[in-house]
Amino acid sequence: MKRREKDHNEAVKLRLKGWSYSQIKDKLGLSKSTLSGWLEKYPLSPERITALQARNPRRIENFRATMQRKREAKNQIAYSKIEADVKKLSEREILIGGFFLYWGEGTKTSPGTVMISNTDPAVLRYFIRWIRLLKIPTEKMHILLHLYKDMNIGKEITFWSKELGISKTQFHKPWVKGSNLMDITYKSGFGHGTCHVRVYSRELYDYVKMGLKFIREKYAIV
Image (cartoon, rainbow, N blue to C red; front, side, top):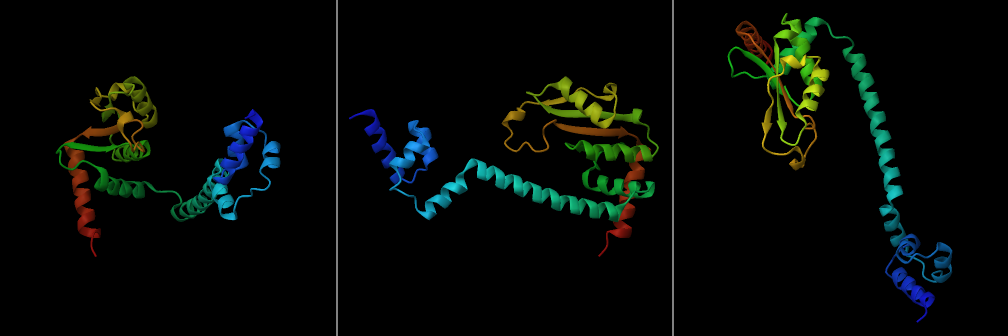
């Protein structure tokens, strides 16, 4: 059997299986013009055409891009609304917000230690701003990182130092986990490990503890 006849028969066989011109072209190395002549009598069903279009990479990518633009537009509307509603926070409001942040995220079982742990630098930056508002200088803050053994320790210390505006001299020796970051299937939020920002002060600890007690007793009511 000649090569061209063999290709023709194979093209027809694939077409009857529901393959598109592009799929057959890639499989057999034939031009679309050749396939158009050979397969004119073998049109695909409307259902099969719809299925192929749904699986088309470019179509899928365009759909994703369109949905992303719609999400971004909705998010921008929500952001503009919250910006108008909240406006600029006063120091008092930042102080109150810090108590609620600490209520949810802060350490409460270590007397004399005020600490928050998080993977999000923005959360920790707010905490640092709150601590400064409570008249604690940056130099009194201690940083501890929890990292994974396949991470570059020096690079991560530099990352957190820049993100938090804290000198590397205030970083303790990181605690390195025996597992690998690459082994984590859900990596969102874990790209730079977990950072702990702490202040050793019994006076500050008592103030924060009583602040949370005040909020619970005065405002956490039905």
